[in-house]
Image (cartoon, rainbow over the protein chains, first blue to last red):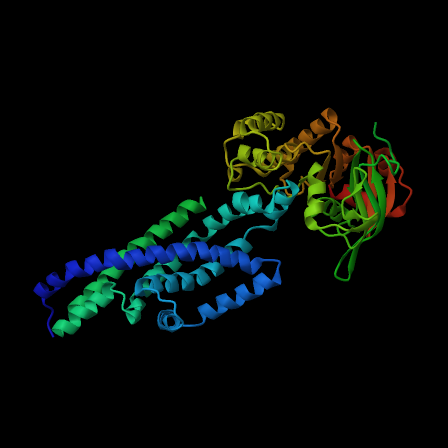
Length: 217
Length: 265
């Protein structure tokens, strides 16, 4: 099988459009869910109230231990049979977002545990309220510590977006597949899709490393 | 005027049969003492004798096992319900401890804030002062501890001694009635100790803040305190004026401890 440049040139624009329209959008939307919900889950796990911390713990363990495609099927088809209809795109964003929120919760937890005990004690000595302690003292320090690992989680999330094929979201790899099925030439579209992933994630991880170095100062 | 022994009614701090255990280990074995308003008390004794635990209980960083601690004539560790004393919630105790400030061995400045932000954080968010007012007061305090020029710097850029002086200003910004000093010079290089002790001497001379001081700096203790308490194994061995304790202690345990500390220097 030979590589055909003219065919590659034909598929590239459509793949790029699918990448910008879906892959990046899904990553951003799911990433926001992961970052916000991850913090909520991390705080829930730390709660003094066992009725909050135990269920949160099991929810995190459960979601992290089951594969994303099964979660997609479950939410898309399972909920539909229960009368809750979500579009494929919304399903994909929710499932990826919640899945990575569970990983982010662990990242937050590690970041929170790394804050020296003295910081909490100084907050107590100054009579800061629990809310103020978290918002003004603990979380800003946590964020600095977790930027590199949180960034890696987002890059991992980005690379999982092709899973959304299973519910038929028209993201980039889906489009590549469509080209392949139509022409029986899969090499060019899938190679280009892979290169686009590489071209996007490598600079991002370099950027993360720079950011990490800057925040460490 | 501070006196050697405060009566029960006018004491700013009172410990009634206070017991503190960590698991099986008894750190305070039924502690009784009072501190008068304005009194400066130095707590000495070997490590593990319970002196730091006394400060940590007052700051609500630890929970009492038994007994009652009183601050300003009201219980810190207990709430009064239907004329009965019941163990207080953490929230209640912390509210009561607002008039108590603490300076730590490891400074514990907030590294995500500038020096002045460290000092104004609690006055603004806890006392509800305006930013301008808090800033003005903070600059005065930083000036007093010789750190005004560093107001917009970050704690990580400062030496240990400088950080500790900022931490002292930060504690004073809340206008505490009681200041707890927990081995505040122990983590410092010897040449930085002097500046910190001078700042504390100045506060002792110019204010009437009650101080509880845990230190190994015996000269400092002799200079600033009205009273020295010697602890061993969770009990008070001896309690008296610095002259009495340092020159003519009644107990052999005090003598051996002081000899060991002074020889170490």
